[in-house]
Length: 123
Image (cartoon, rainbow, N blue to C red; front, side):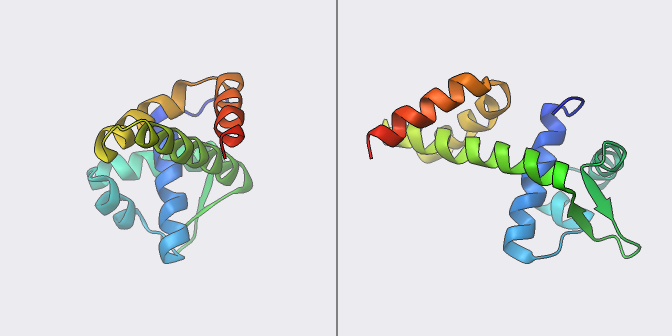
């Protein structure tokens, strides 16, 4: 993930979700989903392009590169597992989702893998 910040990881995660739901993604779709301003989204798109995480075609359609897809999938996987874990403990869905959003970016690979393995043993 090298130069990718938490904020940019969130953008990548949202692009992946939008891509999965809509097929094609434009900056305005990201702004609507996140509630961020168009200038903020534009700035993030430029940074993600510079970091080779996304490509933007002449019509403004955004696609994840392999690098971007890898980062987004990792963050989305973490989000789903961590929020599901909190919900299973009795945390309400909104709180579980908000907490997962924060934790997914800072938890180490080792701790996340141990959590995932622990949860898989219970199933």
